[in-house]
Every structure is written in structure tokens, then in C-alpha cells.
Amino acid sequence: MDANANGNGNGAGSRWFRLSRGRRRPEEELVPYRRLALQLHYDLSAPGEVRAALVVTATTPNTASVGAHGSVALALCLAEELHRPVLLVDACPRRPEASRILDCSATRGFADFLSDPETSLDELVLPTSHDHVSFMPAGISMPSAMPATSGAVAALLRAALPRYDFVLFCGGAVLTDSISLALVPSVGCVLLLAIEDDTRLEDLDAARETLGFCKARKVGVVLTTADPGHPLQG
Image (cartoon, rainbow, N blue to C red; front, side):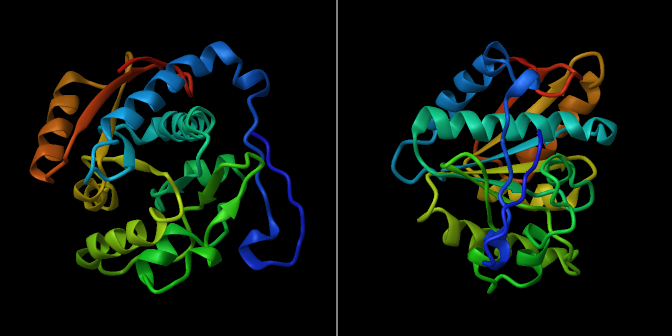
């Protein structure tokens, strides 16, 4: 992924970030993401479904880039398959890998909204080079009180879903990241990445059990490789 800046003097909108396939995203690598995007679309199309998903791992913070690269690719495919606006949110302030990929780690975003849910999305959401994909960085203000986070997440979705057809959160490891756990009951589906030759079966089982305790509506396990952005099957 490479990032470009285009100053237009409009605060958060003064930068746009390129979602590039290039050599890292040949079309054949995107095929599984397109299939996953359509599965999410149809699974969350019934009345009352929350058009939001959370991408997480079990307990492998050293492979945070796998979830981040996968989330960026999935957001791109959602937008291209649905031809509707998609909001990608880096919901992992402690390990903001998606924000690093898009070169906006020092930009206000998700954590700042958690700290002040009255903040307008216009102040925190950045356009990208794809017409239908917008991005909210991880932010620079760590929320001080986790009990308030669930309410802030609900407020974020209330503000975002009327404007975006789909909201995709890039989260952390569910067994160690409390912010990801706070997101779980608010989204329509949690995508749990099982990383080939890395994720232990006992950790995967513990993660699924934890998601159940946190009232996950739907959980999809996605087998992927440690090479960022290569889902094998869902």
C-alpha cells in the first residue's frame, strides 16, 4: 500500500490515501476477499441486521499485519462488489497496523471518538483513492474508561451506518485486546482469523468461547496464511 497526500485545506479531508493493488494485490489474490465480501453482504442483508463486521485474531499480536492487510483488501472488495460506500476503521489503537499501512498513524480517529463520542465523523474520517472507501485511523487519544467504550461504539455505528453501506473494523487479538471485545456485541459479524502454522487450536477455541461470552451475533472463522492478505477459506 502506498499513500499520497493532496492538500485541500479541509481538515481531515486534506489527505487522501491510495488503496493500491499493484504487485501486492494481483487480481487472483483478491478473489477470496471478493467471495468473503459477498458472503458478508448476503449474511447481513436481512432487516434488522447490523451492516458492520469486525476482523480479529486470537492471540497473536506479532501477526497484526495479517489482519490489517486483510481488512484493507476486504474493504476494497466490499466497495467494488457492492458499488456502495464502505467505512474502514482501524479499531486497534494499541497496535495501529492499518493506520501504519496507510501512513496516518499520527492522525485523529477511532480512539479520539471513543474519548469523545460527540465528535463529528467529518473530523475523523479520511477519503481514499477509491471513490467508495473511507478510512478512520486508529487515532491518538487512548480511551481512559473502557466501560464507556461499548456505548461509544454504538454511537459510532449510529452516526456511520446512515452514511455508509458497510462498516468494517480492523481489530486486535480478542484474548488480549479489551477494545476488540467491546466491539463484539455491536457488529453484525466477527471474522476470526486462524493463521496457518501460527494460531494454536487451543487459542482458537478460547477465542471462539470468548466471542460467545461477549454476545457475538455471528462468528466466521477464516483460515489465512502469515503472508499478509491470503485467506484460504472461510
